[in-house]
Image 1 (cartoon, one colour):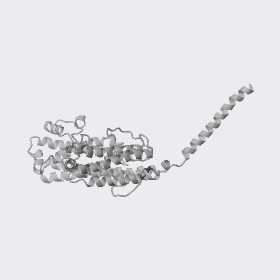
Image 2 (tube, one colour):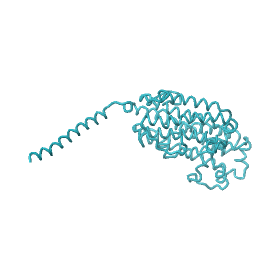
Image 3 (cartoon, one colour):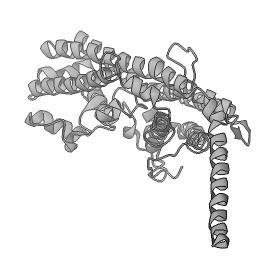
Image 4 (cartoon, one colour):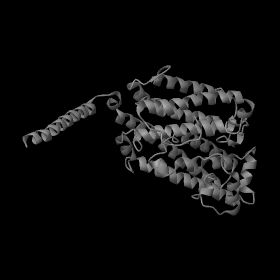
Length: 379
């Protein structure tokens, strides 16, 4: 009996000893200070929330509010002056939207800001049908590309129409009354979405900023994970939809100039340049006044992330600079450049492609972030 008791007690003792050793080892691992868990992730998220996201949404709201006021004035009295004022404010709002495009999580995702604001190219056939019949529901799938800023780009600038010709659509055309009503409906929806997102982020509203700042996880659902995923998704939209598709990357080299963003106002290059700058600012934690705060660049630098060409953060910053330089070299309107200066546009596309690899592969690998969205680009 004593021998049996001895053999029973011995495994229990060994198991207890092993458990104690494992617990101590795990505790030591948890307490260990590593580059990842010693970085001020809360501070980075606070900077991005308070100094980039919230001010960008507020700026967009201000321009949308002003645009709605000018739309109401134009609908009441369509004149050359009121049209030009509205066009000017529209271009400002479209530019401000670029600084919000990445933030398709939380309130932005709930309101589907990207889909409701900027599906391009717009469906001009659906828009004209909606105007001619006067019957439409902007919330339905058939109208997803018949509204938003791209639809307003068509309605306010048309194709090869001068100011007098554009005005005729709202004064003398048989569907002029319906056209004015449709214009107002588009603006009302944009204002509704803009107001909802701003309220949801605001401290005295939904205060989503507090949630965003406190959720420091890099996993699915964590703020860092969501931010990096949406930054990459948005950047690929920039590279593919704004440059690659018009250039002919999906059509065996045949350019499709009418696929560019802001085709009718010919402001595509202005918008894509602002969009790239916005994504760079998010990466750097830099606000619109160029004040530098904690960003993903600091996270990578803190982790001493490496690349075959040196420190990963330095390589990424240099690549942003090179991509911006190549974009700046594109002459004239992008819709014309993809046809007449395709090689120059392709050079910019190539540098953007290099950034995709750095942001989508190297950054997530260095920071332990899983890329969860799907694309058909092949990188």
